[in-house]
Length: 210
Image (cartoon, rainbow, N blue to C red):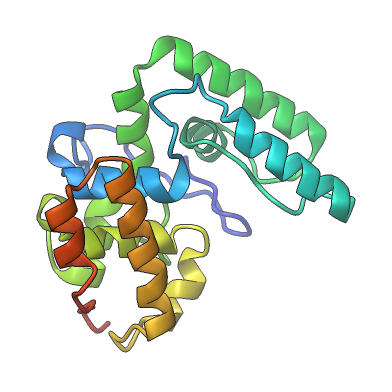
């Protein structure tokens, strides 16, 4: 059960029985690299919690005297989206921490990432990278170019807002600059090589109209 903030729960089948489910080995290196660069750069290194991000977020929250900034790892997002509500309370954060710890015990990293990339919301009624790749580019995830994969990863923080923004199939220069920064991070994390990065950063983004 996926619970986007402010929405009624959405039921998704999490496994091969779901026709839109993409196993890890078929997600494509560009998709995996883009989402890790955008969401959780140390995913394969930490054990569910990125302490560096948590420290930065805590400092921001204390400054604002509230839960203003998130620092959820991909594992935390899986725990939150599958099992919990999106209420910002200390009790819910404690539940999230326990569930994240347990997920990291019983599932390997690739399985956690596979679940995340198949349930992540990327627009109204658009869940998972296959549905998003088809909506925005008319492609399967494994066929996405690095710039296209970066676009999907970049819209994740505010999927409904960005879905409206790109309805006409156009992206402005400010958005391209943001995607090029993600491309740089993908290269820095060795998900794409230098030649691929140099080619990708000179390309334009061609979105499907919807």
